Image (cartoon, rainbow, N blue to C red):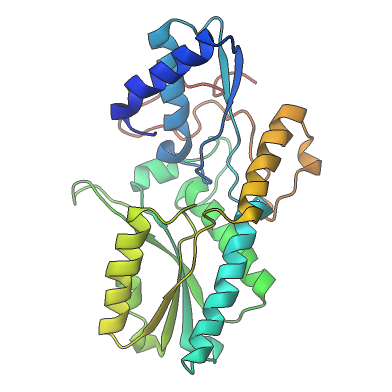
Length: 284
């Protein structure tokens, strides 16, 4: 849900869970990376729903950890890029330095990005949000053995122009490619799990149009969607939490994971709203 307009529905669902006799619930948000909007807000909404329904003393809701570097999430992107590179080769674009790989994700306010992740660790510019995307992109390119240049770009910016958001925008990045000798661009929706409207409009429409106007051959790779590998990965995440699988036995493809089952205090604080209580965020 991730939107205050959905709160009545969340509260109704929580009330129904309690009425059906459930006392421990595991929530799975299909959002892979750490930030306020992609993690903490979900936990705050659940906490608000428990408070609104008055069942917080009887019902416990936990949330599955962020899964940005789980093989089930990453592998479909590897397969998609491999297929995308083949499509570019069909257009006669084969040299690695003629192809730019753009890993695209949702832009967020810089202040929120810098607060993403635990407060006791320095993730560099963009906080854990940017660091997680970068680590996954690096691993994907390593797995493919690709020598093509790549970069992390952003889309779907909103809000007033006076508020800094993560950049570069995907269209701005594309606009700079012809001067760098690129003939093709591979657009990878690394921050998304399905082909929803933001992916289809921002990438399939606007970004592809930008590339076409500049004479670039553009290919957009698939999101994990209903990939059996991705779905199996979600099952793994649930089983890991239910079974209390040790971190050393949880498959992950970057050194940043596996992420925390219980988010650290203050993790992914909203820069505008300040600290608010959230489930699984105060005590182990």
